[in-house]
Image (cartoon, rainbow, N blue to C red; front, side):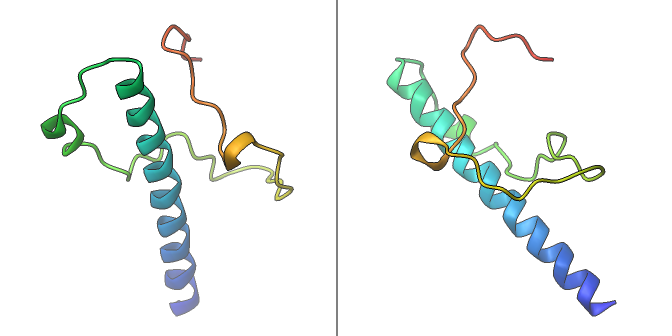
Length: 81
């Protein structure tokens, strides 16, 4: 049981780190594009969003060659799938 709790904590920490890095990159890009990003709005963001994480299925642990170590952000006019 303790091993499961430790593994869950590790997964949660990795998820929060992933989300925080991408949220920071998105906010930086929005500010660079001239959008008014208010600090009080940023304070309400949460890195605990998890709907984009697939917890079932196949996984590949082969690291892709990503520019800057991160996936590119979606364009503002991109359509959600």
